[in-house]
Length: 395
Image 1 (cartoon, one colour):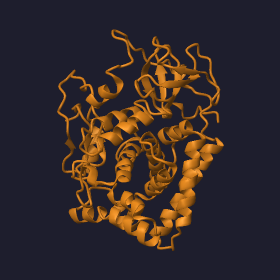
Image 2 (cartoon, helix red, strand yellow; image 1 turned 90 degrees about the horizontal axis):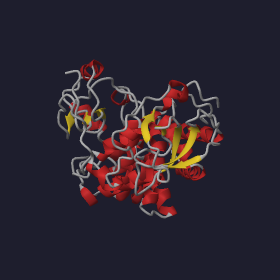
Image 3 (cartoon, one colour; image 1 turned 135 degrees about the vertical axis):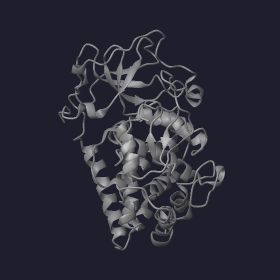
Image 4 (spheres, one colour; image 1 turned 30 degrees about the vertical axis):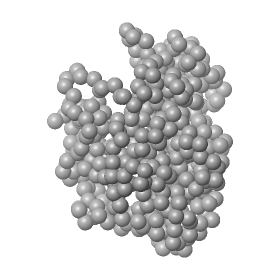
């Protein structure tokens, strides 16, 4: 019924795509989505919350942050003054952003060619992998900002592949991957959903629930992707296994082979986490995108169901509870962008001020830096939605 809330994320019956975030009230619109898409049931690892009951504190978050909330007790958080929500220069028209969009378009062409049966060239993927690594090396914060706040329409599979590759690199670096291994991971991430191009459009684009037979066919896309990656593009089995196993689950309930735990290729375990986060922060046909902070909280609630706990921990440490690139509001009214996570206390990241508490503005990347570990009187009151700044980017 409308108004119901749950203590953990609620997933569609495929147990992959999220239907409702933890603690969020069920709306009439959500029920209409279930009816329109003929969804027979949804699943959750949580429980129905009573009126007034809050979402339980996450144990994984406590383990990483030392149980530090970052917000002093007995503090009343006021909403942001509307005039402070105008940021004059979000660099959506920067050269880096244009390269990011061009990379997505290039991968989109590659995917389209596969769909149309045009002969393939691994050289195109290799160049895309090199460009992906170069973009991350040039400005990781900006790239995360594009991922969290980008508004690119079309090329959904290509955009997902590029964003998943970016996030996979963040995890790999925290795990100590050497450059050669990082490049293989990027290649696998860019190709992880390539098998979807072999699935009929009538199934991929179907508005409504898939039949059992259609779902079985949909679940062949990792096998189709492996065939393309290894047989046609002649990549190594190491890269092929990333593509083949990215839908396997830590608890053994994934596909295509029902592998569990460390039976799953390490690269596939990394891409699985990155792909899940990317899916939550991207707009879908059945729901709006989710802010990075809330997507991270949902991942933390996994409880070793879908993801390798060590990979998930590396992701949290690399991206932060407040993901790099996120926009946040401080208790003094300042609007900031997260530029670096503090690994020991990820709820108190390093920031760059965009709009000061005195309403001073800093175009582009000219604002001063602020480390919340060194400024204990300041704390984050809420995460800001990049859509609040649409029409005010001045770039």
